Length: 204
Image (tube, rainbow, N blue to C red; front, side, top):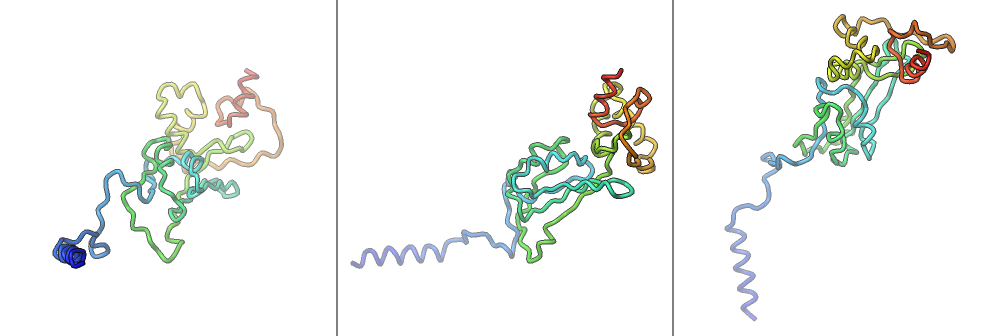
């Protein structure tokens, strides 16, 4: 009968004299492995606003809003890490492979959900014929640089790159079309959406 009690006493003494097993958080930061998937963060230099991350987010922690009514049409990508499950889809599917990364930041507790929201804005490029969204200007410029000389086969990409060298922020906003107009060969050197580009190629 005494043997079990002595064994329990031995274990208790061993635990008291052993070093602490749990972390000292919050007194000291907790060190996580390099492969740990924590808070996702955008790299504004590398992100082109293409929306690939938004399309693959399973919990809609990433959402996209295109504001076409503003003087300068803008795309806003909103990130909410309070609904993120840290699956890593956004990082894996990033077009530039650097636009969004999952960091090692894990201590994300807060009493204000607004602190979990961040917004990132990108200027949109509209079709100069039908006013449809072609993509963000930053995305078109990235494609032009990625393709190099091959970009000369696509006037829209070439014109987007030329606009950047002048100052893309000073390009006048595209006015909404007053009515349906047929695409003509005069539109060849305009930035067009895929639909108008297809119609133009058929005519040519």
